[in-house]
Image (cartoon, rainbow, N blue to C red; front, top):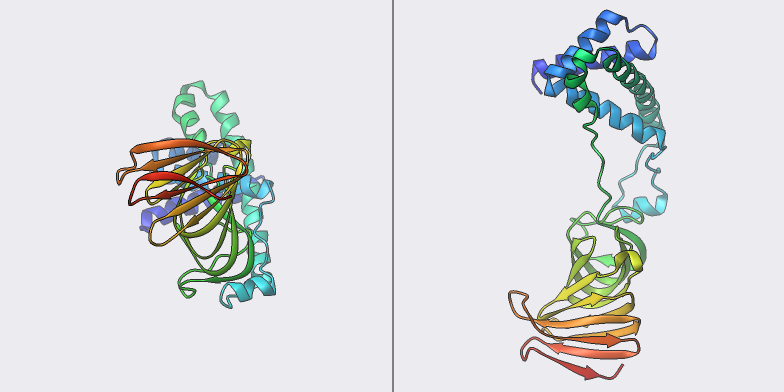
Length: 285
C-alpha cells in the first residue's frame, strides 16, 4: 500500500472516530465531502466502513469453531478471545461509520451544488454474493487430497470440484437444490443452477426455486422439472438416471453439448445413457 493510500485511510479513520465521539466539525466534514468526491481511494475506504457497519448491524458474526470442526479442518483452532476482541473493535468502527454516513448524506442534501458529486458514491454499495454451494451434511466423510481440500459444515465449498473419497456429503446450492454425493465420486460445481457429474453416485432434490436445475455428465444431461432423482455415473461413461418423483428431461448430447435426443422421464422410472452409442434406453427402476 502506498503512503498516499495510508494517509487517505488514516484521514477517513480519524473522521469516523471524531464522528463517533461527536467531534466532527463542519470544516472537517467539508474536507471529507470533497475528498470523497475527488478520490476513488477515499470512496473505497468509505464504502468498506459502510459495508462493515451493515454487516455488524445484521449480527453476521462468524461462529467460533467447535472441537469437531477443528479436527475436521486439520487442527487449525481459532482463538475465541482474540476473535471477540477483534469484533468488539470492529463494532466501534462500524457504529462510527454509520454515523459518518448519516452526516455526509444529510450534508449532501443541504448542499444542492455538491449533490451530484457525492450522491453517486453513496449509491456504490458492495453487496456480497451468496456462495454457490454450502456443505450442509457429512457422514463418515473422507476427501481426496485432504491436505489441499477441507470442507466444514455450514461453510461454502471452497473448490469448484468436490472430490469425495468415501462417505456421504450433502451440498446445498444457493438456488435451493440439494445434491447428495456418495463416494467415491467427483462433482464439478458450475453455478447455482448446474453441476457436472464426472463419476459416482448422486441424488438431487430440487424445490420450486431450483426449477430447471441441470446435472450434466459425459454424453448427456438431466434437467429438473420439479423432482427428486438419482444418478450413477461410471468412469467409463455410462450414466443411469432414476427418477424418484416428479419429472425430468433426459437428453443425450455430443461433445459440444448439442442435444441429439431427449425424453421425458417421470417418477418410478429409470433410463441409461451410453455416450458411445449416443442412445437412451429404459432400464429397471
